[in-house]
Length: 235
Image 1 (tube, rainbow, N blue to C red):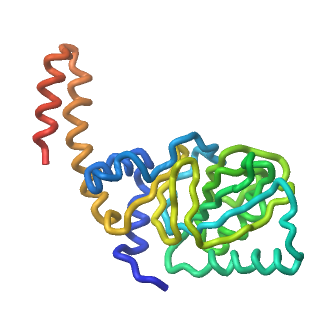
Image 2 (cartoon, rainbow, N blue to C red; image 1 turned 60 degrees about the vertical axis):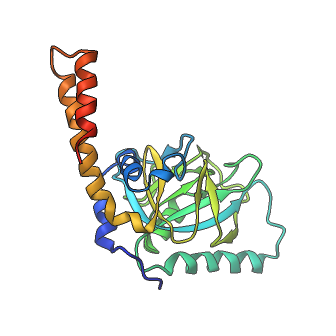
């Protein structure tokens, strides 16, 4: 297993904050990432009440609009290879599946069975531009973010795995750290993971100056300008 500059505890710590807060922190830690590295179109959350997830990416591509055209034995080999790939991880994972069909979501990879299987393999959840189903029967605590909800799995099959994928503008590679909740998902650079808590604390102190002013009955644009300048001086 590859070594990482963070621990399970570091990833679990990041789950206490929502994904927008993580994105805010990344603006401090890696400012050149401000305009990319996150999903830019809406995703459907299987359960908005579930807490954020944070883990190592396990990437793959799927299709569902038509049969694979491969011999059944090959399909089975790819499927088992995928399960082995997801299982080979030293830390919790997040499955990131790109649906390659011209119309993503014709058939759902994610449902009752695959949510249970992947949770047992160590995944916290999954992200896809494709579809999900069985919303009331998914594995407990297993979060899914998807492009659409669809009742059928059609001809869904695994195409390949371990490569770079793209989900709603977010490019993801094997072993990337992913943070996600009902707002969407973001890739966290490995060397930024341990810097995020301090950046969140800094951002909160700066925001407090503005938020406290907003509660002031004598709020004005002039006072806001002063508060903004004061917040910028907080380090």
